[in-house]
Every structure is written in structure tokens, then in C-alpha cells.
Image (cartoon, rainbow over all chains, first blue to last red):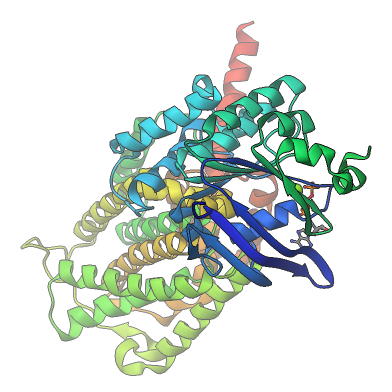
Length: 248
Length: 317
Ligand SMILES: Nc1ncnc2c1ncn2[C@@H]1O[C@H](COP(=O)(O)OP(=O)(O)OP(=O)(O)O)[C@@H](O)[C@H]1O
Ligand SMILES: [Mg+2]
């Protein structure tokens, strides 16, 4: 078997006495769509926050393509090729839709160079990448609108486009369909599925229709722990998962 | 640019103002306006664009001022290299100060910049050889610039105004650059900026250093204005004044703070004669601006414009 793209060993996070993530050891294979499910408060978002170092790790290790990245800073994790989206839409509201995606593409193109003299338009490569990402989620029509003027659904799509524009190798999506209509959710599900196997995707998701339809592998979290791991059919039949989460 | 008018109109207003100013008010006061114009616009790189409320800008004004003054006094350096070195040194000091301060946010950031201001003030106060202590550093010469005599008040105004325009243009390029966009991103959503892959601390330190360099350059111009670099220029009160100028003018673009500098310098001159407690009034104005006119003077202008158009339309009907 090939080396996993992402590997965690005993990864833990405690907020005081509250252990939000408890000794999670998880391997994500290259070119797969790996979904994490679990009840509210299970520690899924916190797990992502550890991977991207939005939060410091309490214990355990994170490896990306065999290299330990546990001690890196968020921007260094991103520079390695790990991109993420947020459960609560997190964009740059006063910048236009294109500028939002452009920033991510520019970082990828230049490594985040602090060019304080050129015009942004001089970076045509970043422009192309940004427009391609917007096209992918269908936001090319509103490229010049400030992000804050977008509808909620479109902001969710922009959230994804910004993540894609940096062309990461490993994508972490935190509930990309949250708050979307069933129709929009299906569209996003299709979109995320189409990224595989060119990209490796880890997705936190509550919408079980989407999860069962698109996942290669599913991990289930409860009370900060991984309680099950398998392909969609195995998870559907797993008694612990049914008890804990599916409620049937 | 958040302003509604086209960019070129702003520039036309700015250049007209620069030409008219020395005829409307005494040339030395007009020179103070353009010097503090640089300072206020540089402060807005931090306040408006980076969202960093620096209450320590006077420190960099002082570092640049003393540096340039000493180079002119003791090394007989020509004006342009003396100013440039003043800018570089204050930029370096600002880089150091910024590097520490941007590690904290909000009120803690403000307090750190304030603390550094106090520190630099006391160094200036104690280091009499370099700063003249509380008497200030006097006898700063004003040699020719590239063979042109800038001794006369109006000639010096012309020189300072030219430096202002160049600085203003340069800062305009900076905010319109990729770096400028990154800085806005770190203000709006630092966490997202980091997860997209930008080193937020580095970007903030860089803009802090740039702002400090422009401020220091202005300090050098100020030292040559009256041939004196006073200790008051480094005082935290001056930092407060700088923030006043920015808030009163408006933080939405670079033109607002320039207007803020005009308003402040003129009001200070007029009011300090009639009423010693005039800073009280300024405090009240700032509160009003923060509560009702977040866009500052520029916003007021827009609102009046809209109001006038609405009235005209109403009357036409
Ligand atoms: N910054 C924080 N400080 C303190 N406690 C936190 C913090 N972030 C999360 N928690 C706690 O950690 C636990 C896990 O939260 P987390 O957001 O990771 O859950 P989740 O699985 O993403 O839930 P949801 O499905 O509702 O998004 C919760 O008990 C939460 O209150
Ligand atoms: Mg969550």
C-alpha cells in the first residue's frame, strides 16, 4: 500500500477538562474522498483546526506525505499544499469575489510574495487560476461583486472557490453543504466528488444523502474519539454507528 | 477605494488644494499641513488598511526627525540622503516595534504601541547629545536641494509639497498592489488569510515598517521647517493627534487623512489662540466621528453631496 497523504497518530486536543479530540489516529489515502461524520460537538471541526494548526495540538502527531507537520504555523501548513474551508463562511467581505479567489491563487503562484509595487493585474497566472476556481463553482457571473453582497448560498460556494484557487493537494472541507437547500447540497456534493482523484479530499458532512453518495471512506467520531472507519456500506451496517449517530 | 467619486477627481482636488494652501494660510503653516499630511496618510496605512490602531506614530516621526537633523548638523549630508536615511532608520525601528506589537491584537496592540512611544520618548529625553533633551535639537540647517535654494518659506513649502505628492503617490501604489490587498485581507479575516497561506505577522510587520518610514521622512522635513526638532514631536500626545487626523478625515481611502491633516493643523492654530482647553473639543469631535461618521470628513462630504442632489431633485419637481 502507498503511503497515506495524511496521517495522524494519537492526535488530541483538550480545552481545560473538556477533551474535544481524543487520540485520533487516522490515515487518508491519496486520491480518495474521505468523510468524517459524527454528532454535534463530536470534535470534527476541532480535528480540522488541529490539522491546519488554527489551534495548537495538545498531544499526538500529524504527518503530511510522511513529513511531520505538527509544529508548523497555519500559513506553513497551507504552503505545503493543505487547503481548507470553514463551517462558518470565512471570506474577505469587502473584497470582490474575484479578489477573494485571486488572493489564494496569488499565494500559490508567488509563495505569498509581498510585492508592494506591481498592479495585481500584472499577475495574469493568478487571475486565470482565480477565474477557473470561480468557474468551477459557478460564480463567474458575480466576480466583481463585493463578497458581502452575495447570498448565503453563494458565499458558501465562494468559500469553496477560495480554497480551490490556492490549488492545494489535500482539501479539507468543513460541512460545505451546511445551510444549503437539498438541491444546492447535491450540486456541492457532485462538485466535491469531481475533485477526486486529482485531489485528496477530507470532508466533514452531516447530510447523509451526500455522504453515502460520494464517499470512498467514512470515519465516525463521537465524544472526540474515532468509533468506526470503513466504506459507506460498512458504516451503514455498523451497529455502533447506528447507535451513536444514525439513530436507527 | 470606498469613495464614490472617480479617482482622478480626488487627485484634482488634492493638487488644487496644494496650490491654493500657501496663499490661504501662512506658508510655514501650509508646510506643516503637508508634512502632517504624509504622517496622517502613513498612519492610515495602518488604521484604515491594516486595521492596526497605532498610537505610537510620533515615535517614528521623532526617530526620523532626529536622525535627519543630526545628519544635516554634524555630517553636513545633503538634504535628500539625510531625509532618505531618516526614513530608513525610522522604518527599521518601526519594523522592530511592529514585529513585537502585531503579536497582540485590539486594545493590547494599542497599549504596546503606546508603551514603545513612551520608551522612545524617554530615550530622546535622556539622550541630550543626539536630541537636545527637553530643549529640542536646534540649529538644523536647510541646505540647497540639488542646487536649488529652499531657504525661503514658500520655496520650502514647494519642496515639502513635492515630497508629499511623491509619498502620496507611492502609498497609493502600495495600497493598490498585491501586498496592499494582502494587508486588507489580514484586517478583514486574519485567520482566513493564514489558512490561504499568508504569513499574517510578516505582512503586518511590513506595513508597520513602511508606515514608520514615511512617518520618519516627514519627521526629517519637520526638523528642517523651523530648524528645530522639539521633544514634543515625540510625545504620545502627538501620536493621539495623528490618530485624530486620520479619524476626522476618514479611513476609507488615502485622501481622507490628508484632509484630516488640513483640518487639524488649521483648527489647532485657530483654537489654541482663543481657548487653551481646545483639545477637549477635539475629543468631542472624535467621539462624534466614531459614533456617527465612521467615514470621517470625506463621508460628511459625500452625505452633503447626496443631500444637495436630493434637494435639487425635489425642488425641480
Ligand atoms: N476554541 C474552543 N474553546 C473551547 N472549547 C471548544 C473550542 N472549540 C470547540 N470546543 C469544544 O470542543 C467540542 C467539539 O467541538 P467541535 O466544534 O469540534 O464539534 P463538531 O464535531 O465540529 O460539531 P458540529 O457538528 O456541531 O460542527 C465541543 O464541546 C466544543 O464546545
Ligand atoms: Mg463543526
